[in-house]
Amino acid sequence: MKKSLIALAALSSLTGAAFAQTNVTIYGVADAGISRIDNGATNSTALSSGNQSGSRIGFRGTEDLGGGLSAIFTLENGFNIDDGTLGQGGRLFGRQAFVGLNGGFGSVKLGRQYNPIRTAVENIDPFGLGLAGNAANVFNVHGERADNTLSYATPNFGGFSGQVNYSFGEVAGSNSIGRQVGFSAGYAAGPLAIVLAHHDQNLVGTGAAATIAAGDSKTTMLGGTYDFKIAKLHAAYARGKGETATGATSIDRDDAMVGISAPIGAGIILASYIRRNDDIGGGTRDADQWALGYTHALSKRTNLYTSYARIKNDAAATVGNPVAAGRDPSIFNVGVRHRF
Image (cartoon, rainbow, N blue to C red; front, side, top):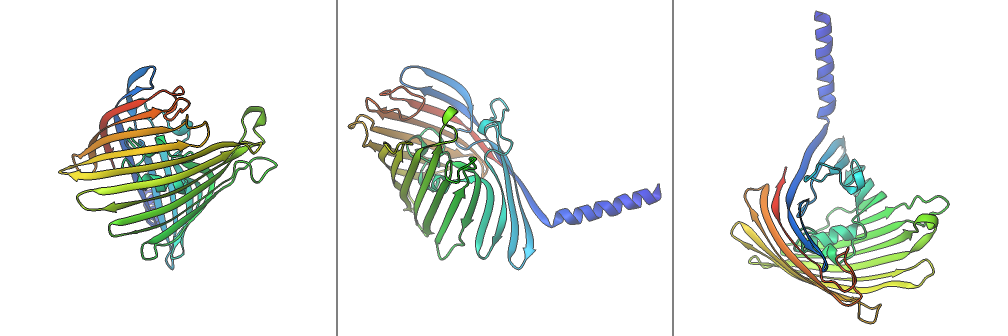
């Protein structure tokens, strides 16, 4: 018995030493609120999850390999806090799942990751791609994430940095169908931040056409912020173009945003205006979005929020899906977010 206890103690010490070599952080967000959505024809009120930030729990780890090189990984699960179900279509780690290396050369990661253009829009949007007025209602962020992705991010060179992503389509018999390529290049120092991002996505057909290309979608975005201390100015412009499998133009549009975020006491006032000019449809697919929001910090980790956004669609526009053409949807939400 004594020998068994000694052996168990020795094994425990060895296991502890092994785990001590890898630093693992558990983190997450719990976000819930009430949302009222009016799609122009009907309306609904519901308790909803992730209005400001998607509810999640994640595991982030690093291991020092010596010589300035580290192994890194992130496994991030998304869930709906209102009913406890999994997010991202029921994936276990649907938000992020990657492993890689980090060092003086930058970082290389492999797995499910955010697209550079999504991260760029989030950093420019005063609403941070959250709340009712988030820019993704209008701007194309190409699904936010991509599977089967190899990415490289540069170190920071005096405020300059960049990232390149390549996502394998993994469609049998083709190296191009479903493939995605994206990059971003930016500068951030002092009150100024500027970023240029591009995403090129070869779409995949559905149903009987699931093994053929369904066209190509491209978006280029230039944006920036400037912090005047009393308020931060936000601005962005994006150009989107897409083709069908036959080469016919299906998307040809310009999106522009101006916004402001202003601290006031323990809170921040958020506001933005976004305009879409669609070159297809003879001016009948244009749209405008106005948004106003407020967040109030209760602590470093917990805050209250509220926001309202309204989209005005021209006769054939459907911005703010699901909505019928020409309808003018609006959304209001109020809730609480805790980060841990």
